[in-house]
Amino acid sequence: MDNRIAIEGVHAAYGSVRVIEDVTLNVESGETVVLLGTNGNGKSTLMKCIMGIVRPSAGSIFAEIDGVRHDLVGRTTEEIVDLGIALVPEGRRLFPKLSVEENLLLGAYRRSARKQIGKNLGFCFSMFPRLAERRRQLAGSMSGGEQQMLALARALMLAPRILLVDEPSVGLAPILVQRTIESIQELKERYQLTVLMAEQNFSQAIRIADRGYVIVHGKIAFEGRSADELNNNDLIRKFYLGM
Image (cartoon, rainbow, N blue to C red; front, side, top):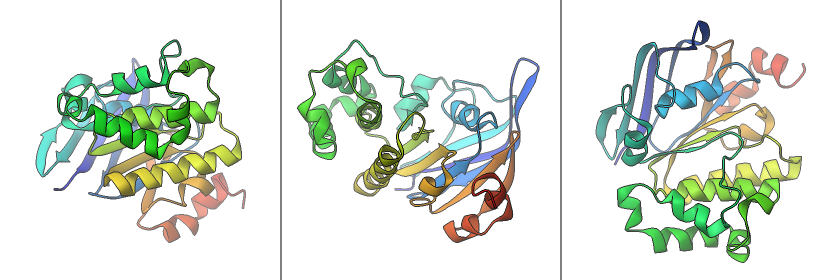
């Protein structure tokens, strides 16, 4: 069944401050699409619009889940999550005083996911053995890399069809960034996910992206229809490769 996102002409603001202007992009079923942009260019706001945390002032956002089309604008975050769309937020947003396992169990909020708790928990522990070893450890006492593993695994407990990942590299050492990006790719393939990832680390994001967009000052400045197009774009070279 198809699982995709279509965003058309979306505008969003915080009060009188415009953050996103006329953004149009799409993520086809089974793709990994990267939204590239430096801090403050609207990547996280767009993710929040998809999840119903920020309501667009104009435009449309549709998700197709298992072949059924849903209008996301106006839905609550709870309703959007229940459709099978999961967000790994920037900064991870774990419950620091709860254990690893308790954080994971809280991730199984979606009604249909509750029936698969045992299976999904086993999958998460097989995917991230470190979490199995530390299942009773408080989340707040773990390293940044371990917390990012937990944030990804918590999203998987939702049994999602579409996975949104916001700035997974933030606060991580370079070797951990590489491992995190590789984990996202492995999860996508094993779980047959559709992935939209917002990221500013171009060199790592491009390793797993099928294609992507560059957002500058809240507007889509470039659409790369392949990883090669992204690699050979002058805008990318200027902002990310220092060329």
